[in-house]
Length: 365
Image 1 (cartoon, rainbow, N blue to C red):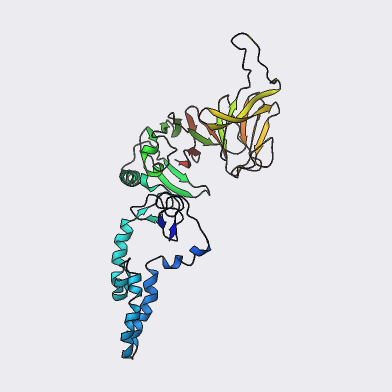
Image 2 (tube, rainbow, N blue to C red):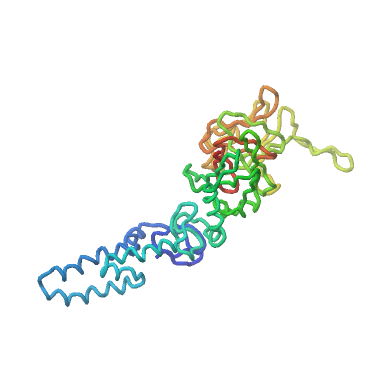
């Protein structure tokens, strides 16, 4: 057993996250020898050969040897499955079926969990959000394709993506002109506490077009930029690279004091704005002025470096003026992408990737 250092709950040796608080469990070389003994089905397979020896051996003296085999039975007594397996192999599938039906599959990784678990033992997903009403909500999207589709409506699916690009689950949007999604929607949204209850709204437009609008969510809706496709930046726009949230701000003086005294300050001539790190709601940290030539952001190369953020590429993006004199944000082939926060309704195309809460969603239609 592994005892959680955070809440003190005991967990099985093969668990990666605590069932009580969701914290990552410590791992070491000592946990590996116990992993083979954890599954209840592995013990009877080794105990079956000794039981077969007395029946197949011509020596009747082997029957009294059964008492030494009896001690392993009490050891395996907590799981009642071993005894029926040795006596009647056909009975083994019967308890297995209810056990599988009683488990709660993790919506993120699919690992079967005991109904009382608060967090997934494999990936740490918050299972409390899917215990109760959410499973019924999750079943509704699956039943939607069975019914007749609405005439002229293209089916839309949101697919949650993990950090490695693999799919973590999908949500079939209802066939309606407008569909709102958020933490109250359930399904793949239920376990994300960074999502607002009503986070964003999708609207179907004429000609099989789709648009998304942020419904005043706390953490916003971000759209992943396509590499080398410039995105216009206005003062007040925010974008995200790696784990950094950056806002493009205007450089302007503080003005005079109430009694008409001019304030000291560095001259802003030759700069087109500044990039400020957002460290909290309406709070910024370090700020970097943008010269006329523009700036490059990255982890190893560029004018603004985020050396401690492993999700930022060596050379990630560029902020500079275009031929029309306006300022543009361009992703220059980063590994994890550059995301711009949407301030108004925005048309999206098939395959666009959205960042909402802590999850990435691919839009397929």
